[in-house]
Image (cartoon, each protein chain N blue to C red):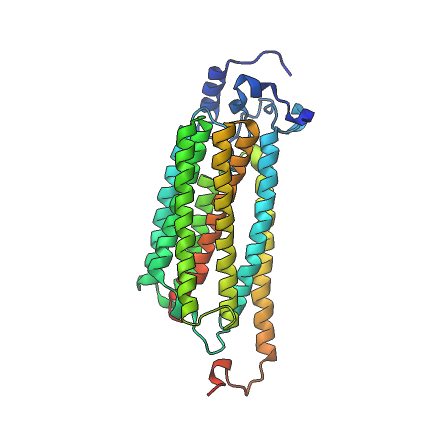
Length: 231
Length: 139
């Protein structure tokens, strides 16, 4: 490693000049950055490794979801004389649920912007909003399931309904557990501050929450919207 | 604490100038880039979501093509989320994440398309042609 390092502000300027769109590309003539895990520059820094490991977990979680999606796709026509998807989809409620989850993804991203700026108050405010929107989502979904159960539409009724409740319920369970995680993260940020391992956990939480929103895109499209179109 | 954990920049507040990042973790000089990303992501997501609900609710798209249109919109929105919320980039430092993502997508496609294909095939081969469909059977 060379002993000469530019001051931080010069580094920032150089970075903006060489990589205006923040794609992470650097000039070919330059040596790779320290801690990037490339070539002779040594092992990647811990936050890179943590993010990568959690990314692998998320991908495996998405593979689990894909199994439930496959089950739903296979069982689409298996109504056994019971209700079809067209009869149980409540599009306005799905639109509200989608809006709540999308906005919570947005506030989650803003909370991490505040974390990057080391701003405790806004980090907490945006995490709290994320939690509220997630709670609203879970409550709307619980109300939907309760209303269906009151009409005798339960997972035991048909293969379609088993797959439907399995897939949507698994996602709701993820959001619920994510909400509990969020609450503990708020407590940890408050009590321990922006310590390195706390920021790593916030990174992981962000990834988790955004991944849940990606899964929800698949659900509202394949289960609800395609189901709402009369066959 | 292992040696892997030690990074002198950590203690000088200069860690943010690494040229690398994990998904969802893009060290920056300020929060501005993150806020811009979140705003753009929300904008595109709202447009795509509204388009999806519109396509499903109206007759803008030819009936039999509605499902395909919805799936295209969903894939587009997933891409928007990956780029603007999860910060997956084409940068050389993101190679590992992108490779893992590509493998994940491959597995998802194998599971979903394979299941649909196999079960459809079994359905067609196993159903005796004289039988009525199941929902017609009970009186």
